[in-house]
Length: 64
Image 1 (spheres, one colour):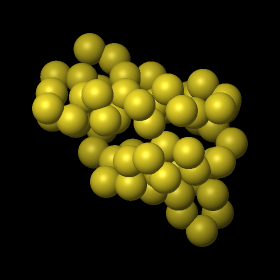
Image 2 (cartoon, rainbow, N blue to C red):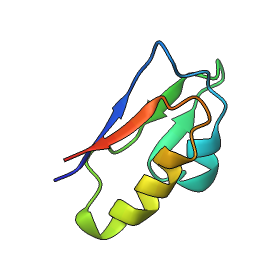
Image 3 (cartoon, rainbow, N blue to C red):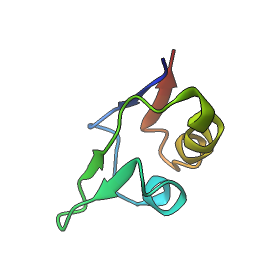
Image 4 (cartoon, rainbow, N blue to C red):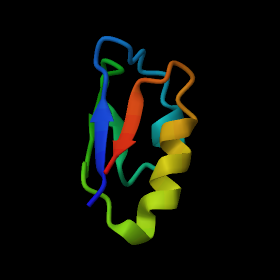
């Protein structure tokens, strides 16, 4: 099952991931990103991968 990984040192809280997949990513009031479901179902992989790839600072990875 795929797993969403976050490089907290790189993440700038820009919110592109949340804008594209708000059911998996959420920014809190301090602009800290939280992964709501780190193990997306295989059927959602393409959707989550698009959000991961949209990160402008490359802070996200979708690992197998």
